[in-house]
Structures are given as structure tokens and as C-alpha cells.
Image: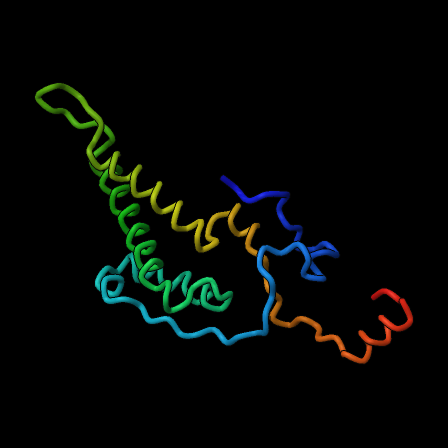
Length: 159
């Protein structure tokens, strides 16, 4: 089930004021470094996936130290998907057994790994729909002068 209401529009005036975002913005915090778990280091394709995506996820604060093992699972699933797809490309989708031609066992493994990958990727905002639902935080947001805000409130002027 999805969340209620339409997707936030990044360029709208409501987004500029922070009213239609999914999370309220707090004070800006520095992103903490996240260490690559040993299981990911041991698998070259998983480590490559980590190196490709981790920096941007850490910068956007979608990947934090407490989520490192969950992201590691996503990296390992991506590596599994690549491995199963390579196996199917090499050996074919159909295998012949004593009961006749059947689907290759790696086909089911690939389907299940892809399903699990998409579910975890959604949690980190790595799918198109989930990326649209997670508000973008501008690093170079203009800080308003408190005196200007008070003056606008006093005179009744809008932005």
C-alpha cells in the first residue's frame, strides 16, 4: 500500500516552504561515515555496487551506520541477480531432465532475488517511484534573515 495523497512536486511553492514533504526538515546534520561490512568486501560485485551508490546515499542521509547491514544485503542481492542472470545467459532458460525440458533452477532464484532487491531498493529510494516520494534536500538553501521574516509578518506582506 502506498502513502496517501499525490506525490510531492519538487518545484512547487509548497515544497519550497517545506509543507508537502514527507519528512519535516530539522537542523542540518553532517552525514556520518558508513563502513563497508566484511561480507560486502568479500564479494567483488557487491563491493562495486556499494562503491557506486553508497556515497550519494550517505550524502542524502538515506544511508546511516545503523542501516549499513541492510544496505549490505541489498548489495549482495544485486550481486546475486548479476550472477544468476549470467548463469542463465550461459546455460539457457531451459534444461533437459529425465522428466523432459524444464525451467532452469537459476530462473526461480533470479526471480526471487530481483523481487527482494526491488523491495530493499525501494527502502533506500533507489527506484523511480520511491525516489519521487523522498524529498530532495537542497544543500544550498537560502537562509532567510529573521528580521526580514518578522518585518513581513508585521507588515502582512508575503514572500
